[in-house]
Image 1: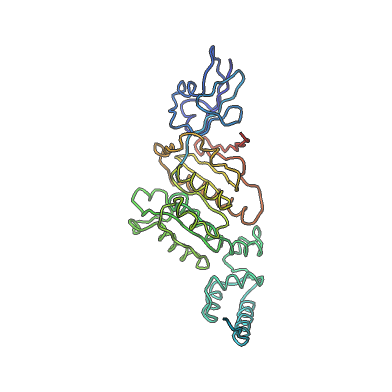
Image 2 (image 1 turned 180 degrees about the vertical axis):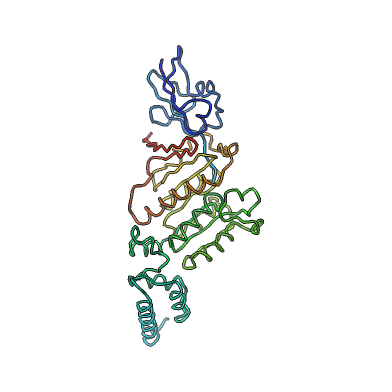
Length: 74
Length: 290
């Protein structure tokens, strides 16, 4: 299964802007977030193919996962 | 029972005619110098704001707005003057928002913030100065607006936004601006704006990063952009906020306010803009219906 991951803002630092990864088994968003070393509590918006998704959603072959941090300061 | 008094009415009309003639005589190239605006207020016992409205109604632009003239018509300037904008939060974003609205000539501003200035605000909050530490942020906003543009009325509300008081803060408001620092309170504000059918301009910041969106009643945009971790603080807890990010995001918010008030331009509606000043990138993300 191939998944394209797009990271935004501070999630990119010391990581990447976009990467395509191969997985042997199915993965949830939460498992990929953990694999990337991103804290669950810092995740704001999760998009799969441009639509809002949940942490427990399972990715399928060809999906694009976008992760945006939670931004709340004023 | 009120008895109509033709004498007083005609006297008021005569005064208004005289005042209008005074403004026309004082204007050069359609522009009214501020000294003349003040003199008109003094002579005819009017407020600076009243003189501004009469001036704009009669096709005379207060000279302070002359650099607006090419992009904001006289009629649009009058629309701004007759508009009321509520700014929730007078910190990093809110300070710049109040400043820019006042300079634009938005006639009525409601500024809501319960806090006082503290030393750690000095790195970014435009309304904070050393001698204002310990003072209420909304009082500083009122003083600043009075010093910059006395035609603008600012109502300082030194209270926290909550669902019970929200309706009072939003009375007669054309646009609400989110400059808050709490996600749960933002979501409450969004609900309240939805209920009272008021457009809401949202901005938020953290470190090098920011975001912007405009929500109209029924859009439920804020619910979409904060789907997870709604009770938590954002990454600003770790990232802090520098001087420049609030200025950028606040200015984007004010541009949205102006476009809503003047019904012009393209808004960040049903999408949200991410602003990344570190990687120098802005992304417009469409928000699809789920």
